[in-house]
Length: 292
Image 1: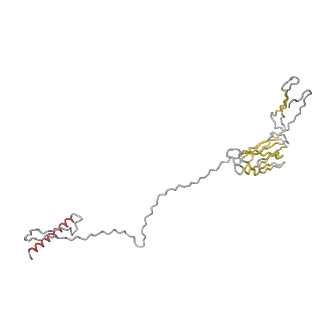
Image 2: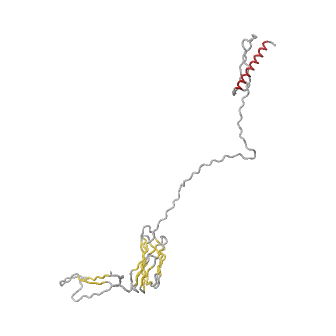
Image 3: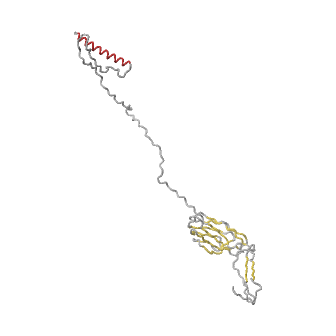
């Protein structure tokens, strides 16, 4: 073997040893680039080898491993036949939806019931003397409405009977039979702001105090209305009125007028309403009426 060839072989072995030594040192230091074969190391022959022969300067190239692109990590799949898990749906928080058109509940109007009153025209009254029983219905309060279906029934106490029907402007049908003791109105009407009356004459043959009971008035629109109980006194002891007459001027010259006054007073205890008042006065001779 020629000495030149031997020199080249030694040089190549030296380069390989150096490369391996560098790789081992990097592996010891846990360098990420310590895996063999290492990087490309350019080796150049010395200009003056020991043999004195000038060797060429071509570098020795150590091949690199091919670049490997890592594969994407595969998602683990469940065994065949088992469905893949599904993520739970996201449920948004419940938000109350306002009512775009809120319903309006009307407040019912308050309808005022009518006033219902009854009274006797003569009280006390002598036995056998008629007295008028009046029912007054007033629909004049605030909140009053037109009323229909007015109905009431009044049952008179014992010993008080109906004499006759006098008047009814409440509409409907009024029933009150002479000699009976029941007064009833059905299907009456009354406009708002108006008042109507029903009048019936009644009579008692025996002395005593008789109380006409509470009576309830009904209608189609308003709440029921009630009348208070009303007593009537039938008595044979009735105080007569006082009756007085007087002249305004006395004495008086001849031919001069004077006033003659008649005063009737019905104010004593036991007084009753009086009807049919009558008197006659005949003037003495010499007195004549000038202006009645």
